[in-house]
Amino acid sequence: MFDKQKKLEISPDELQVIEDALQTQSKILHIQANAGGTGASRRLNDVKRVLSHISQQKPRDAKPRCRSRLGWFGSSRVQN
Image 1 (cartoon, rainbow, N blue to C red):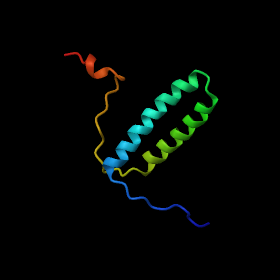
Image 2: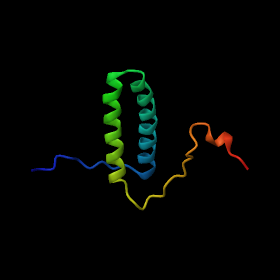
Image 3: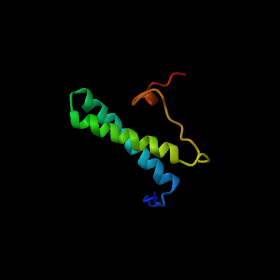
Image 4: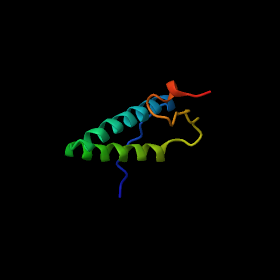
């Protein structure tokens, strides 16, 4: 079979912006899907598939960004 995929030149910073935007979209769609949106469920699956593909194709030598695992307001709740 012929490979019909085209190469796209994206900088690591641009890729991170895209990945962050898709993560945000995934959170929004998750809330909409839990509220009963059938279209949101399908779209959420599409976004998750793209995020998975990005993580598989992402260069391993890129510096991982520090992400808080505490949620949206985690930075305001940091304890000393």
